[in-house]
Length: 162
Length: 85
Image 1 (cartoon, each protein chain N blue to C red):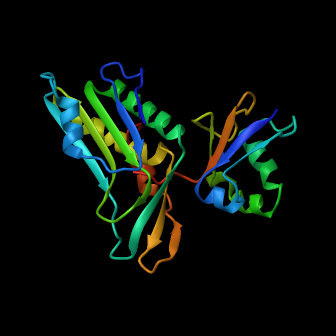
Image 2 (cartoon, rainbow over the protein chains, first blue to last red):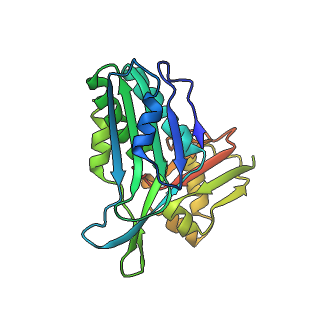
Image 3 (cartoon, one colour):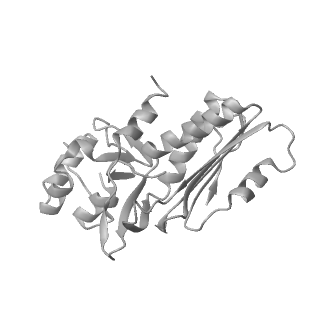
C-alpha cells in the first residue's frame, strides 16, 4: 500500500508496508529520477540476523492501517525538522529469513547533514512508535518468544527531544 | 457505547482473540479504566493485562496514554511495546 502524507511540506513521503522484499537501488532511482535538486541521499537498511545461528526466521506482525499512519506521522515530523526533499520508508511483515531485508529508510536533501539526520530520526522513531512486533522462529523448528523492546531504543528516540 | 477492540502480538495471544466488539459500562471513561474492566473479564484477559503499565494503547490508529478518554472511539487497540525496525 502506498500512502502520502500532506503534513510533509517539502516532500511527499513514500510509505509502504509490504510482505514482499524491496530493491534498494530501484527505490533510490525512483526517488532521484529526473531531479537535479537532490545533493545528498542517505539510506538505511535493516536486515534479519540469525543471532549466532539460533534463529531460522523472524515473524513480523503489524497493525494494518496504523502502521502506515504512524510512519506517515514520523515522516512528517522528520520533514519539519530538516529540509528534506525526499523520504521513503518501507517496512516488511510476515516471515523474514536471516539475511533478508526488514526495513528501508531513504532521506534526501540538498546537503548531507539533513539526509543523515532525517534517516536516523526516521529509524529511531520507527523502532519505538511504528506498530510492528517481532517473534523468533528457532532453527530447532520451535516457535520462540516475542522479542522484547529494548531500553536502548527508547533512549535513542529520547535524545531527539532532549 | 459499542466499540471495536483489537489486540496484537502477545496481548492477542493471551486473550485468544484478534478483535471483538464490546459495550463497556458508562463508568468506564479512560483507556486505563477499559484495560481494568477487560482484565476482570476472565483469566485470559487478566493474564494479558497482568502488568498493565507495559501494555500500550491506540485509539483510531493513534498512540494514546492511559488517561485518555475513550468517548467517541471507533477502534481501540492494545498491544505490547513495539519491536519493529
